[in-house]
Image (cartoon, rainbow, N blue to C red; front, side, top):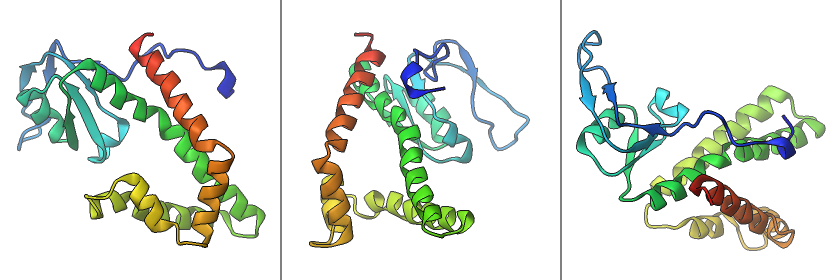
Length: 183
């Protein structure tokens, strides 16, 4: 589907947790408990691999326990915070398009598809660990750490910034937020 023809999805990944739902399996996979939950949760597909996080609102011990068995849980106090965090999920396709742009450039410059993909995946997996390895550093600090003065990272960051890429990205996030919030 072309990017210009997107419409509001008919099915939301938001999970209203107001009805009886099965919990994650206990020590014996054949045992399924049922709990009654109240609120919202936004589980992402990667929790099937015990990666990523689920946001829940409002904080609830039972809901947290359910999703903690599948990955990290981020509890939020109100729907405004829940909606803002939900916007992050709108960046997945852009992330992969960014990686695809790098991969296509490599192919045009003589690198085999598999080698380029493996190298890109390995590098970005390692970069994804940087915030956890430096928990006190904000993302801009990490960008500065990786942008050696006068180096190639600094060059690409500067060129993308000068072309307004990050401003356009922030504007897009704002539009997604208004859509999610129903404004």
